Amino acid sequence: MKKISLTFWKVYLACFCLFFVQIMPLLAQNTTEILALAEQYISNQEYDKARETLEKVTKGKNFILVYPAYLQTLLKLKDFKEAEKTAKKAVKENPQNPVYRIDVALVLEQAKQIEKADKENNKIVDEIKKQPDEVILTAHEYWLKLEKPEWANKLIAETRKSRNQRNLFALEMAETYRNLNQTEKMIEEYILYATQNQANLETVKGYLQDNLQKPENFDKLEKMLLTETQKDNQESAYNELLLWLYLQQKRFLRAFVQAKSLDKRYQMGGSEMLNIGQIALKNQDYEGAKSFFEYVVQTYPNTENYSFARNLYLKTREEIIKNSYPTNLEDIKSLVGDYDKLIQELGKTTRTLDAMRSKALLLAFYLDKKEEAIAQLEEALTLSVGRTDYSAKCKIDLGNIYLLKNETWEATLLYSQAEKLRKEDPIGYEAKLQNAKLSYYKGEFELAKEHLDILKQATTREISNDAIDLSLFIQDNTAEDSLGVALQAFSKIELMIFQNKQESATEGLKLLKKSYPESSLSDDILLLQAKLAMKMGKFEDAVAFLSEIIIHHPDDILGDDAEFLTGKIQEDNLKNKEKAMEHYEKILTKYPGSIYVAEARKRFRTLRGDIVN
Image 1 (cartoon, rainbow, N blue to C red):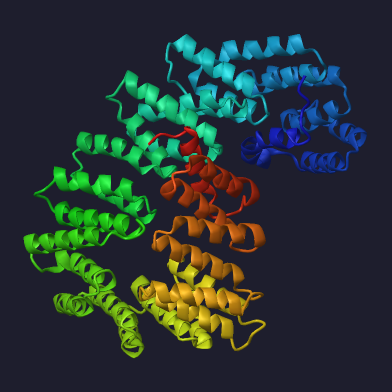
Image 2 (cartoon, one colour):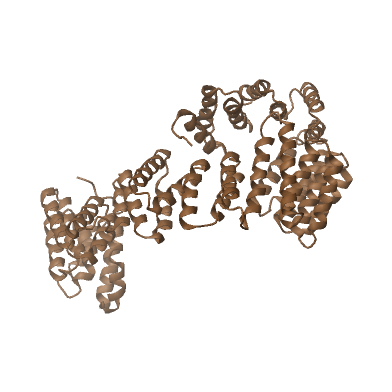
C-alpha cells in the first residue's frame, strides 16, 4: 500500500478552495471561529482538541464546510470507522460530487482495506466514464493531485473504451503516464495530441521540452516519430516534431530532410530553410548550413530569397575552407572567383555588399592583396550611403585590414568611426571590442580594460562574454606582474598570428615559454601553440601541446578546452575514432559543467553509432 505523503492534506484542502471561496460568506460567525481554531490545533498536531472543537458543528447545516478538516483529523487519529462514516455522509449530501466518493476509498486504503478501496474506486470509474464533463475533474483535479495516477489513467482509458474514441483526453492521459514514469506511453500521448490540431504543436513541444531530460528519451521520441511517419507520411505533425527535435539536438543534416518536406508541403518559398540554415551557420555546422542554402539556390532561382541564399551558401563554403587546415589557397582563389560571379550577376548594389566584403577580406588575409581589398571595401562604403549598418561593417573590415598592415592608428580611427555610426547596437559593440583588442595587442592593458568593462554590459551575449573573458585574462596575468611584461610579449604574438606571421609567432612562443617557465600564462602559451600548429596543418604537434595542458594543468581553466580540442583533432584530422571518444568521454565525466558537454556528448554518441546523420 502506498503511504499517503505528509503534504496530502494540503493538496486535498486545495481541491476545496474554490468551493470555500464561493460559500464562505454564508458561514455563521461562530462556525468560522470554530474552524479557524480547529485548523490551528491541526497545525500544532493537537488532533484530539481539533476533533473536540469540530464535532460541535458536524451535525449542523455547516457540516460540509468543516468536513475536510474533520476528516483529516479523524485520519490522523486513525479513527477509520468514524472517518468512513463521515465520508459516506458527505457522499449522501453531495451525490453528484465525485471527490467524496474518492474520500471513501482513501479512508478504506488507509484502514488497509485495499480490496474494498479498489472496489470503491472501480465504482467511481464506472460511473464517471459515462459523464465526460466529470472525467477531467475527477482524473486530473482529484486523483492526480492526490497522487493516484493509476486511477486517473484507468478512468481515461475506460472512458475512451466506452465512447470508442482512442484520442480522447490525450494531454491528460500523457500526464498520468508521466506520473507513472511510463515515458514511452507519455510520448505516444503527446504525439497523439499533436496530430489532433495544428494549434496543439507548440503546446506539445513545450511539454516535451519540460519532460524529456535524458538523451535516451529523445531517442525514444525520434524512433516513435519515424515509425509513425512510415505509417502515415501525409501527417505533417510528425515532420514538424522531428524538425523541432533535430533542432534541439543541433542535428542540422537530419533537420534538413524534415524542413525540406515541410517547405514543399506548405509552399514556403525557402524562407524557413534560410532561417534554419542561419541557425546551423551560427552553430558552426557548416555542412548542415550549406545543405539549406544550396537547396534554396537550386529550388527558388527567381525569387527574393535567391540572392540572400546564394551569398549565405558562399559564406558557408568560405567557413568550411577557412576551418580546413592548412588552408588551401586554390580553394580561396576559387571562392573569390565565385564571389566575383555573384557580384557580376546581381550587380554592385546593396544586395551584394556582403559578397563584396567577404571577397575583400579573403583578398587581404589569404591572398596578400591588401590594396585591392581596401579599394573593394571603399567602393562598398560608397554603395552603403544611408545604410549605417553596412557602413559600420565596412569600416570594421577596413580597420582589420589596416591592422593586418600594422597601421594601428588608421585601424583605431576606423573602429571608432564604426562605433559612432552604430553606438547602441551590436555592430557598435563589435567595433568597440576590436578597439579593445587593438589596445591589448599594443600592451595598453588599462585602456583595453576600460573598453572591455563597458562591453561587459553589452546586450549581445557573445560580445559580452568575449569582453569578460579578455578582461579577466588581463586581470589574472597582471595581478603579480603589474607591468604585465610576459603578457605584453604574449599579446604581441597574438597580433602576429592575426597578421598571418605564423613562423615568427611560432618562434616567439618558444622563446616566451623558455623565458617564463613558471608564468601564469603557461597553459595559455600551450593552447596558442596548439592552435597555431593546427593552422599550419601540424596536427600531431598540436596534440602534443594539448597533452601538456592535460597532464600538467588538468584543473586549470583550459583543462576542458584541451580535452575537447584534442578530441576534435583526433576525430576530424587524425581520424582516430577511439582516441577521440576517450577525450569526449573525459569532458562528460571530469568536466560535467563545461560549455563543451553538449557537443562532446553529441560527438561521442555519433562516433559510438547512436546517432547517424
